[in-house]
Image (tube, rainbow, N blue to C red; front, side, top):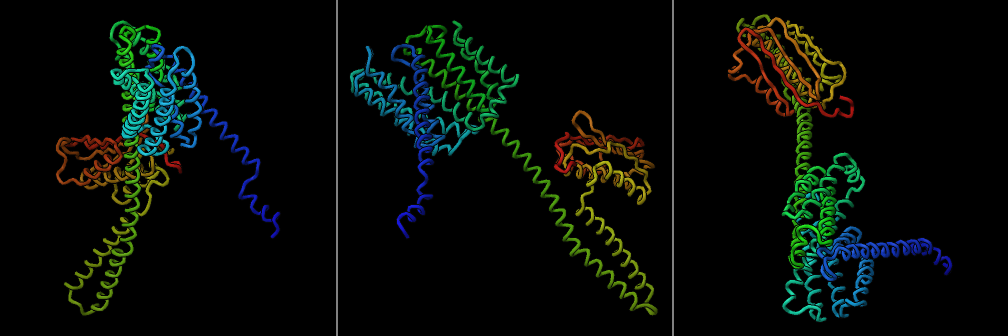
Length: 531
């Protein structure tokens, strides 16, 4: 093969120059964009400083950790460039810091972001949405560890540069650690929650309730920190509202509003925190923001866990009903293949025995064989009916039409007139719910036939205010309503079926007054086939 041919063969694997240029351009553009975002966030933090050197929160740490966590550690050059742009400004001007202090700060902040991103990936996994309490705990552990690294390196670098004495290292470390932690707890959860489903989160906040929630959070946050009296707790009901109704995305958005307003108002020497000494003012603000953020995050996570548990429970109940239906079909097949065939063989053998003894058989044996044959035929009839019931869907054409068929069967078989009333259109019930309601009605009519001595019965199906109700009434002898017949397995079966549907079953009866069986359940989505 010639050299040109070999180059041509390798060209697809190597990639075209155009594709490589596009990738490099995207890579450089992403790094520049991340550096610009990091620098802008840092400028916001510097603009909200209480003094020239004391900031209550440092938001870039949350942005940096969030970016590396979501998009990968390979984007660290963007953080490095942004951090360099911020720190270069600290080397010039009247308040310039020693080079050793600036370098130490640069190293500490980079280590903080890298450690935070790595710990988040280890503790939370990829793409965490902060909708579990365990994820919030993991977030707190990761941020507490990462910010401790930055505070430790930064404090020692400041001591090495002579910016702070040994006696002030503890206070500086605390302020540094809490400031980075507070900034990360405001920005990082906001990034993670909104990166999960941004469009859905935005649609939820664009509602009237969302607007009212934002207005409440804003108004109460201003009142909480601008009033002279200690009213900082006033904002917490609004934060809980945001967490309950809008999940982690709404909670993190509300926390960001509270943090921005609290620091901005205090930085303008307004409100309760501004009346304190600078150290206490910074500490109070940091703890206030951290507690508010953790409260909202934990409430949102617990609410999400409960909603998820409720959904799993509903799904499990649905699957349980489906498995029960499959089990019924399996039992029908087993009965058809085993018991039904055995009964048929027994009937054949009985008839053969009758023919063998025909003519000279003793009367008692002949009568016994005839009785055995009748019993086998009766068992076959009952078995066929049971197999049909287990293996078929009685409400395939809808609940009310199925009840009409049942009424005709009861009248023909048992001589009891049954009148059915109800909508002929499809009901907003699943197939399983309709099957269970049909079984309750069938059991109730069987009880009427066996025990009531009624001349007529009525079945009424109604749909009203999102609930489906079924009444089965008769004009029979009834019974004392407070004392249901002992050993009445039919009533127990009906109650069990109603509980499985999360419905309510009541029985109204009295001696000589007949009986009314009423079952009601909430209407839900229909099956995909319209039933």
